[in-house]
Image (cartoon, rainbow, N blue to C red):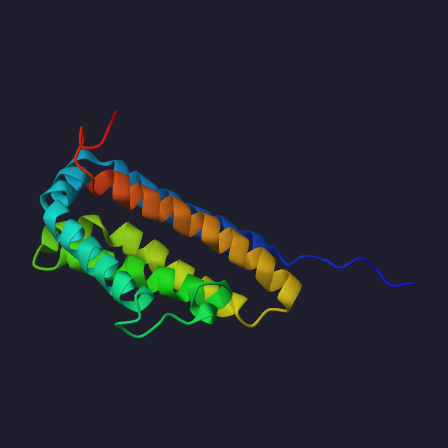
Length: 158
């Protein structure tokens, strides 16, 4: 008869640290000064979104390189989301050291997610799927927080 598996204390500690990193990122995005700086960068976000939309349309219409199915799901999808989120942060902070400092908790959270995605890619399929769901949910929260912080109030609200 085999003894039950023991979970190492380090696993719980790592989860607690990750939770603190993500909570600190969300708190930074709630800071009014950070939100004001993000609002100043609203135009660059809109331009980047338009560029992304144009690239997507070009690929969908066959005038550009078509997207590969494997890049829309699983590991690669998460890798692309992390890279896009990091690129958005870089775009927002370019030329604005004050905003870059204010967004450092968010950048730290993105770096933590990048490591988690890399680790998840090496897990057995069942555990990988569970890890991907957790990572996907955390990316959803960070992307939504960043979007809400950068979107001007009153635009599109009904």
